[in-house]
Image (cartoon, rainbow over the protein chains, first blue to last red):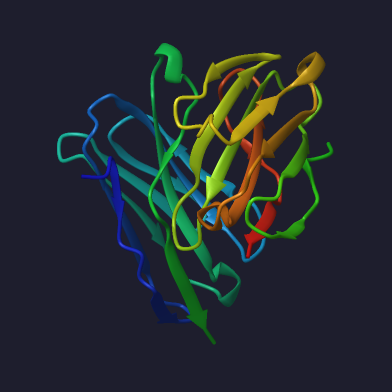
Length: 114
Length: 112
């Protein structure tokens, strides 16, 4: 079983739709949760960074963490064609020799069509 | 602020050949990571440096992969000899204080 599972999609939605992206994880040591966006032939860039269970908003993006269920989500409101990219969830634990090491999901390919 | 620089951007080699990738992290970032991203998968950590010391290389195939970070700044990742399954994008990332990791554009390696 992979430590982080993410539905690879692909996901295709019309402009203006609400998008929901999800990851589940099995390692209880994960304490920090991130969403990265990766455009084609580019490196990942950080979108959202959360620590505690609950919701965190940043503009059109909302990150949700449920540690009891080991489940995280990213919601994109009013999606735009420029949101078309691969979205990667990533997690890390709080310390030890693996401090800073990110464990990624496999990514969800999102296409927003006009 | 300049981002993480990587070169080359693309490389095509035959199996059993050797190849090297270079990374220049963001100035002042003490921690440097090399990730391997196979097509359709998320990045997987190969090695983590803190300054010029190795923190984690548990997933580095040490029989063929090597990495160094001289003087705690630039880093090189080498593969010798390359196998077909090494075809991937090799991403370098750096961070200050263990917070956000900043990724470079990656080197796309094709092994034929």
